[in-house]
Image (cartoon, rainbow, N blue to C red; front, top):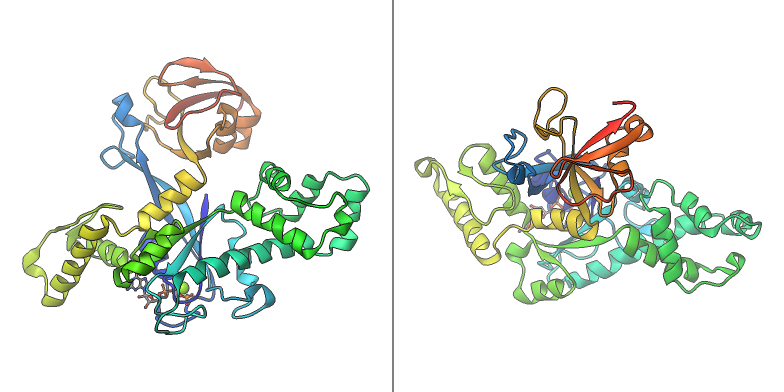
Length: 387
Ligand SMILES: Nc1nc2c(ncn2[C@@H]2O[C@H](COP(=O)(O)OP(=O)(O)OP(=O)(O)O)[C@@H](O)[C@H]2O)c(=O)[nH]1
Ligand SMILES: [Mg+2]
């Protein structure tokens, strides 16, 4: 599960990345601080299955399960990137593996679309141009050598198979391409497709196969009107640098702060200097107003709402909900809704999937077949020839 962070330069992508992953990343108030992509592990949270099972689990934090996902922070994207402007679009390739994108928008309006300091840059323009760049990127992949290669479709190859080959590696499924084709008005003969046709198909492919969440970043210094505009576009108020400060203060033992929390606790008030007291006061005011820094909300919205993933726990021992070594609920996987017991088996290991015999729903102790659909939080024993 990979989530890509995108946006214009200087919007706060690396700050968001560093806050969410705790991995070091270069942060600077100038464009193109990041050239090479940063990759790191972040987590989404979900109520652990041990709660309802009354199981003695040591893999969650007091009933909250942390499930790892990968974040990718790429170089800033400027208008015309698909034509080679700014850093060009080779770094869009870094986003190929992302199933969902979070666009980091500078809602404060203090930087223009190139990431240079500006007095009043409308943040909604960022949303518009970025979508446009992603659409052009996908359509350029679709249309590469179109006149020559699309002959195979005229010769009988199924269009969706042909397009799926084209988009291989972009984390876009055949089913998503089929849906996008159904939603797009296209000429029957692929030979007569124009760039405009490819662009309308690319728009639908992006909406279905690479959805974008909007983080209305720098909310701590944004005007109410800019924030309202972004919220009307679905933006989530976010203050990445406050989240980074909170996590750093938590890691250094100054405060106690839980992921996505609406508050923090100062552990050693006597040890704080005036500057730290002022900074924590500012953060506290922000949390009172917004209830959270928004970073965790963006990531969880991407995974649980946009991608609609569910959690499942494979185990080997259906009585103790444990693996072969006795570890209770050792793993928690994220799977698309409507995934089956067989899908989970394949996620654990190809051999386990190939050798699938049956599964057991550990909550009900009922035997379930390979086509049985899993529910969020299911605990499943897979019986396989290879296990
Ligand atoms: N006030 C405020 N400043 C922020 C926030 N997030 C980031 N910044 C500042 O914005 C500037 C740019 O941050 P970066 O994280 O380097 O931005 P970026 O999008 O990765 O930039 P490039 O790598 O150049 O594309 C830095 O000065 C950050 O401290 C925020 O939520 N609030
Ligand atoms: Mg950066």
